[in-house]
Amino acid sequence: MSDNRCGYGYSNPYAAWGPMWPFLAPWMQAMQAWSCAMAGFVPAASQCAPQPSWNECATVPKVSVKVQSKHRATDVTVCVDAGADSVQLDVDPLKISNKTEERWLQGIKVLAECGHVSVVGKVPDDQPEGVYRGVIRDSSGRKRGELTVEISK
Image 1: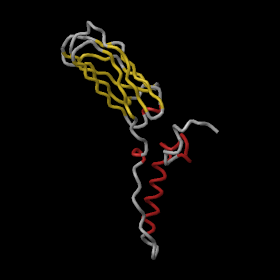
Image 2 (image 1 turned 120 degrees about the vertical axis):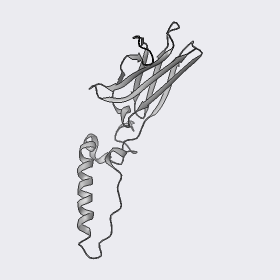
Image 3 (image 1 turned 30 degrees about the horizontal axis):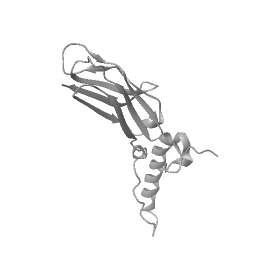
Image 4 (image 1 turned 180 degrees about the horizontal axis):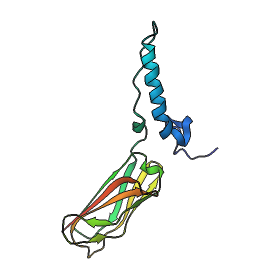
């Protein structure tokens, strides 16, 4: 017995399916739809209640931001997909998006743990102002969200 309550623990309605639930849920919903349709031909059969879509089952993780900056105004915006906390995350290099010149922001990392995604790092003191954007990806390269850092003086 483990103290790990993450992943497929008490809060996941698909705990019995384990890691295969993303593949089984659409099939189960198809079977439910078929059963509900056939129930209409059975006398005195009750109507089926609608079930949530399989992609609504994963919850969006909580996000915390700890970015140090000496700039007067540094805004960090993070958008992550549901279930992003269950995989290893990395962020593409943050590239400036409001200028024609090519500038990058280094030193920002994205960390994931069960139910929580953290953005940590430090903005260099000599970093030029601008809006820097990068894609948050999992270890397979799949997009899991987006990170934006806006520096203004």
